Length: 274
Image (cartoon, rainbow, N blue to C red):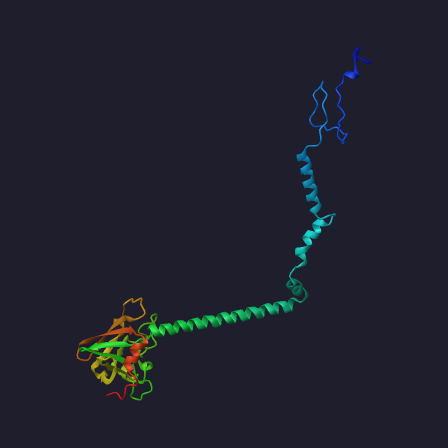
């Protein structure tokens, strides 16, 4: 019995835990005992035990030691590209190699582009792009030809006036005959350039018959009108031929495909013009 602050307190009245009957004699703090009662200590909760075991297993899988993090980071750095080291060791050689590779790639790209352009030109040649000047006089069709080698024979399509015209440079062949720059191609300028009007037959073949340039007063270049054709073949411009008798004839700048010229010349060159 202990007397404190004038009050008597019996220690024997303090609630106590009853000794557990299991081998584990350490009382568990769960759950808290109720004052004035006597409770039997319990074993650790099974869920807590399981959680502890899982955590222990996880920790065992982690790298051990203070350098564990450094080891994990070392792997990517260990395979750093050798190119950087080589460039630092010999930057001139590395730059030369890069320049050589760039030059090779550029050369290959240009070769591919050229091949592509040649393919486009071949397709354009098949579709059209060759350009005769046709004139209708008295119901007959004629084309302007230029005897470049002065042999009196229209050898092939390369002697067709305007054959090198493009859709971006229409009537260029005819304009080139205007030597004095007065805007009119006269009969004298036609003769000086060996340019003639050759008749095309009903079968589409070029004959050896021509319309005399003496019957032509001239071709007014300002009469040329663009038809704004956006296709590959057909009429792309029109012009007027002034005749010596005071009349006029209608002319057209057309673009024709290879089949047109094969028919125009047949198998052989047109023989001596008359």
